[in-house]
Image 1 (cartoon, one colour):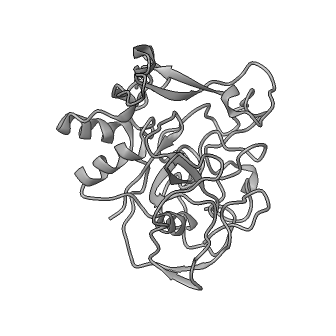
Image 2 (image 1 turned 45 degrees about the vertical axis):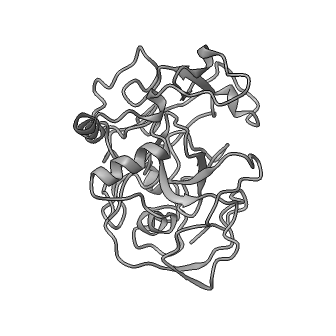
Image 3 (image 1 turned 135 degrees about the vertical axis):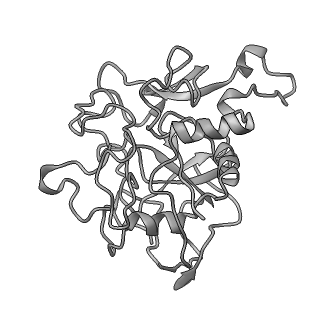
Length: 284
């Protein structure tokens, strides 16, 4: 488990893990599946829920309007050190309106649901009789039976000249050449499954894991058995924000900025936040 690639600085040390058997969804949770959950329960996601001000003095009312983060490509090349140049806070963006209040899910019911916070994924998992995967479970499943390969399909990013996942092609973040056929999310099962018959374990959307995030695997045992991650969260870049692990990368990943579609790589996210490239799948 883990990654020794020099550009991946938070997935070390590489270490051995033993896992008991488990079942995992073949695909990311789709808009169709999440809609059934919402219809059955009346659930409102974090992105749909008005914030409550606890600050003194109170925050202005207009700042409490629900919003979510939406990818917005800039019209020209930009300095990649500032990610706010391609993310926008969009009021009214949520799982039913991925780009904002004027968008909808028409033709996208078999796409992965997005704008799902970690706090939203858990109620769905419980309702479906499942749970979120641990980071170790996700990584094992993503490997598809291969041993220490970079990608869920092998060692080469583009075997036979064919893209194996929905990731970014072109100059990031301003120009997506869409060589893989997609500009944003892709319908689940658009690319070949891995060796375990699982789809989109790399690319398409980031996927929540149950583990708290810390920037390394310090304290990992020589052979870690069924690890569930650290007892709390700490990200030195944002020490006051509680974060959970994300795995798999998304349609925005590229070796120019974020090559974390590699199996051993990892991401992180505020457990209360949502964006247009984050979804999930479940295990039991």
